[in-house]
Length: 608
Ligand code: ADP
Image (cartoon, rainbow, N blue to C red):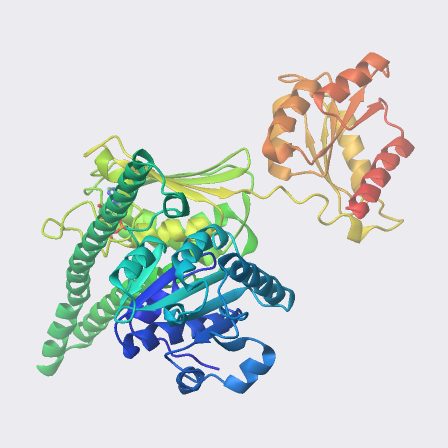
């Protein structure tokens, strides 16, 4: 079933929700149908039980209007979703009208609707029955006032239809005082003249009434101010969009001029091989530039529609940064900038879409090259900080006024106005940078001490913990019990270290040695051993210090640390545990004790 929505009134009717008590003061049948029929259609769409009390508009007319709008009336009636009543079936069931009884009936019908699987009850109907002479009809305003205690918070909503021609002005006045929302022609109004039920039922005192009226006026004014602010925001966006279109046209026209010139050159004929090659290169470059602009535009639209998808993989961030630096090198060299790159020795594991992060870094590097006068310096740094991997791109360029920093990553935000712009660009690069970084669960920030003082952009991405024992358990076999293990042995007694290394290598381990505390730390960071055997008494740093420093690092939590000491005192063991060791062995190491350590590691790796 399809209900085409058209017209303003239909839209506004669609915003009504359960709990609303609405009056419709209509002047003619067209107005009545224009609001009442969409109200019911919306209810059917929302899976509410819809009830219509017909009178002036007959049941047949309502059904016809609904089926014209595509409703399968019979099916909806059979389902119990559409129920049509006359005044005799509803308000005047007992030949008289009783407000309390009617509210009770509404409440029961709502409960029954919910129990039958509907979202609630939606009612509309003509109130012309109240014009009749039946007993209780004079209590209609009292009923309307009481409904304001019933509807809020209930699973039902209603539009009470009043024909302005047929009801007296005093009734219409009170109708407007008893409905928080009023439908008048095409308008769905928040009713300023609405009064809480107490005022109508018991009169209220003037003091309370004045307070209420003032509150209503203030609420109205606040809504008005809020709307005006929204309009101003929209106008500002519209202005920026126009400015942006001007930039876009300008940027897209730029590459066209050289291409057109080449066409003219080619037309002149009699070109040598080198000239044709030159022409080819110009076209290539300009087409490449243009496709990049278009690709950026498409990315921006994908990001704003949440249609940009990431292909994440585990990778070493250093590799991604290296690639980006290679790509941007030509722009950096062209501008005679000096490039400084600093990265940690060890890998920086992240789970990212490499192509997208590559794009982000290239964007920052290209900006750094673009916004720095010839012969400047660009610094790229990769480092880790607790659970984050950080990439920063700094330059000694034109810098950014701090007032522009907060909006730098917004779309349509460019520091220079259109007229001043001299360095090209669409002004959407940083919006894309932020979009992609945030999709990776990261952040990006810009820092600058001000114009002329350079800028620095820093991206923060979640760092992956090193995978523990990634290769060990697969390679187990009896002949090479240590196969798959990376092992570090640190001992200032070189013979001791080398012989232990030889022994472990003969059992399949991949072993490195270190002969003092500093070398031990370097080895653990660079070689990423699964297990490190550390002597305690070593030059530069003793074994306890090495263990402590390693454990403080985010990437030093997983390595299994084995202390080797000359003494097996309880105090030694306690100190070893405090420093972060997992095991404590007494020198000279016994083969079986060493094998036991590896067997335990293998078992715990399998359990993970
Ligand atoms: P574009 O470079 O195409 O204008 P971006 O979104 O990449 O668009 O950058 C937005 C604005 O931020 C730029 O117009 C420029 O004013 C400012 N900006 C970006 N990077 C730098 C930088 N490294 N140094 C100074 N200003 C920058």
